[in-house]
Image (spheres, rainbow, N blue to C red):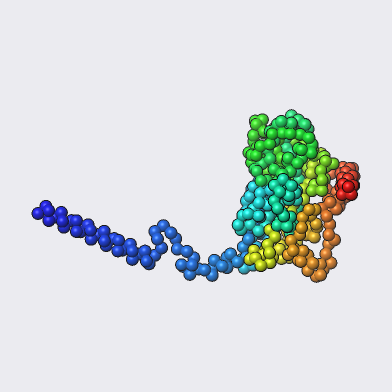
Amino acid sequence: MRVRLGEALALIACGCVLASVGFSQIAGAQAPARGRAPTAAETGETSKVQQINNWTLGLAGGLPEGTFIRFAAEIARNVNDPAEMRVLPVITQGATDNIKDLLYLKGIDVAITNADVLDYFKNVERIPNIEKRINFISEMAISETHVVVRPEINSFKDLQGKKVSLGAKGAGQSTTGPIVFKRLGVTPEFVYVNNAIALEKMKTGEIDAIVNNGSKPLDLLTKFKNDADFKFLPIPIDRFDEYYIPATLTSQDYPGFIKPGEKVETLGIQTVLAVYNWGRESDRYRRVQRFIERYFDLFEKLHAPPYHPKWKSVNLAANVPGWIRYSVAEEKLKLMSGAKQPAPIETSQARQSRAIRMGGPGDPADQEKLFQQFLEWSKKQGNNKQR
């Protein structure tokens, strides 16, 4: 009896296994494998996929505490439309890495960067034909170089051998910072720490200074409680070339760092809206073309709140030294000039001169001093070009 019972149980078990195998084979023929969701094509949603992706492109911005990501988000807010355009602002390491993203990262077509970064890729990383592969759409707001130091630091010489944070690797200041210190003959120990964290490390003396590029006022500094008496170091403009212009930081910009009525001279860096030089046969060209058309057509809306006030200083027709304007942007400017009398093409240097003359916060004597400094710097630039 036990033998027969055992044989019966074995047959029942075998039948269950076969039934299970048969069921799984049938189920496998009718449904996706276990653990995999059905694709859009399998559920008949191919047209939706095409519709959503049709006019989508990526815009490389910067770190959350910087101004690049704000400008990227505001561009997206201004040009986006459910049926016409979808721009995806992307948090990145910053200006330097944004050029690499344009070159190598799938889905990134446009980026915000600094004008001096292109020179870095030409002469340091020596990327072949970089100026032909990366073009610009328009200039953007001037970025100021902020050098924040501990209270016992009174000059750049005091930072010899000291720890200076350049933020995350790939940020704009990771290019500008070494240029500044080299021109001033100072060799610090550069470290790469997120500058929001670096400011806290400055309180304990682990870091002596930070360098940060961005359009003033920076949230990084305005939201920082400066109870350790950190301050800005001034940067003299006379040591620097065509990528930089005179700029000032004021007590109105940073009341927690600068005493009322005082100013700190620094460098202004021209910022650009850069683009990969897609050929006309490319699908990416089609997307970028529509983006540029909407960016130019809707640009005046960026002049009103809640957009950043520095949009008002941007001249779409301004040239950027060392850069080539993308063909679509060039064609769009010509169309606009045919439709109405355009503003004269103005270089960043000319615009800065006008801004200084028209003035900002501060008394006329300070503005005149800065303007004379600008004239002297411009004269030197002209002499250098004649050599």
